[in-house]
Image (cartoon, rainbow, N blue to C red; front, side, top):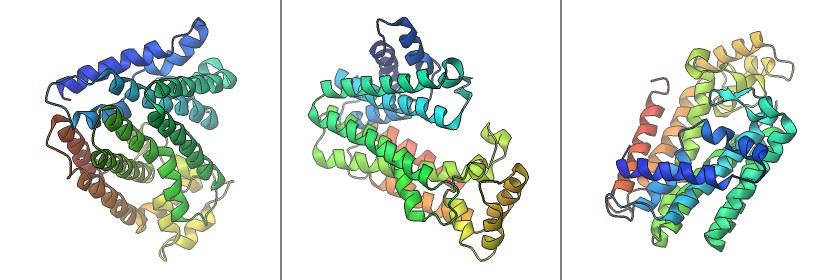
Length: 323
């Protein structure tokens, strides 16, 4: 990690903690729970790197960029609070999930609080940033609703899958880059290129993540493999396998709301031996290549190099998802 980016991310950590403090200590504790648990901070990192594409080497990010990065991360954290309630998760980032520690009602309200604070920060950065973040929160909800509506639907379309991951994953990464670019004062063509980078990166990242759910072992994932199949979330490799002549009919007979862990394991074997995995890797590779290509118009800078390194790492991950 570049020293300047590392120091700017440390400033984001401070902003995250400070902006969720309230007079109610109990709410502050809940709101800060996952912040203090840490995380990769991919989204604020992208916001800072996007802004840095137009900055001199070693120049610290303006405070507006730091606040923009924090607002995006608070949206992400708020969505995790809600996701864990829906999934009945017990852990998150190696600590108790908020719902497991304090209950569903408090977890939902705390997630709402984080989204509210994110919106408040965005409003302080101007109407464009505020409108962008608000629209992204709506898109996140739409993506999640699409996934819920498609639960256990073996006839789910690839187009619906694409729309869902665009909403639940790619949209926030695109917004992170766009907010970083806007608060960094970059020219509009560069803002648009960075937005495209975030979107394409997010699409590739989610497809790879979904491939790993069916090809990796539980030990490699740190959670049960094939969990999406068990929960009726049929992702791209499964949808492609369902449409294959080799395993489609047999796989279709296994997938239902009554699926057992044993049937899940049978389904995993079928998906792994189908063309679905290779076809999905091709899709992910296409998105990763598009992310890399979107950086071409950007000036040579530390920020551009950081984003290019992220794109290169993603391409390597597509080439060897288990490596």
